[in-house]
Image 1 (cartoon, helix red, strand yellow):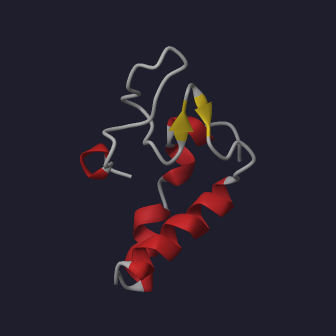
Image 2: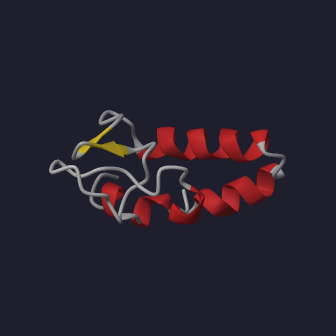
Length: 77
């Protein structure tokens, strides 16, 4: 999620400060809200949300192709 669109301005670190790396949907109090979420699971969630907002399926696929390169998912293949 683009931080500009995060209604809370980002998640929170363990010390309560705002996370500049992760959104409020994914990261709270220094932990991932869904630690068991896989790359494929995240792709599915993002695609579903984009389709809910009216994006065509092919665009949802394009927007999710870089998820594996994000910091959370590096080396998690």
